[in-house]
Image (cartoon, rainbow, N blue to C red; front, side, top):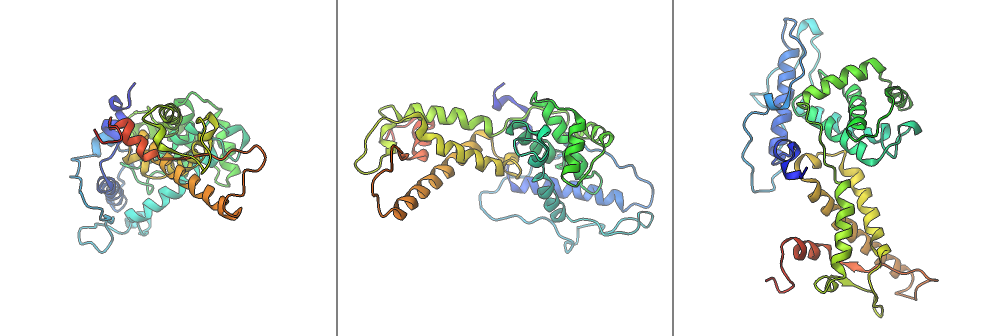
Length: 331
């Protein structure tokens, strides 16, 4: 399936930070309204489609839109009902911080960096779990649904979605390794709630899947007549671009995506955009590191042994030439 035809593209990719904040504010307000009621209101799971409402108009400026605070006259209840102890309720900002904290723990539960060896899986599983976790809390609140339990459920569901199955007991053991134990029965119960909250939309495209094909296409393009001008070799060196020349950029981009997947970025940008941006940043970092190394060596005192330095690559120029279908003259 093409990304443009997927539910992630037309339903789950948000238009702006304004829309993201709006969804979180409404989820927070629903939870505060329920928890402040004196009657025994049911603690429901809200589906995304049923609660999304009208999409806010996107803004063209770069102004950061703040979440609503308790000082706002339209904020609503700030404490739970007397029957629930009259405790202080979380603000949307509080919830956002908690979501970021718990989402950052997902790669430690499942994925290549998992604390428990039996929970080590491909990076795409952690990426899928993180996105499913964040999708759920676009229409639900951490005040009603324990994020510690939901992240374990997201990890279990993501393993099945990505065909990297593992025994749920290993996840239970993994949460204990993280000093945040979640019982097996709670994980299974939370998985049902998770699927309901994300409208049973399980297909996920992650940035990891875009980096490899972009790098392969970049390698081919840089060998063409149009692409050769985007490669800048060290002074006095001129050779054919080799496969290993792009490995430092590829590896650094993958590390950048490790941080991106636990953020809000995948909610607002397509995987191809995220992967390409990671490659641009990785290329700049690789070039800067190489220049710094040359300066420390005294300004290019030669190549040690058979080590070959990577060239500087204009990846932004590649994107413009390759995807905007223009040549170097802009035609």
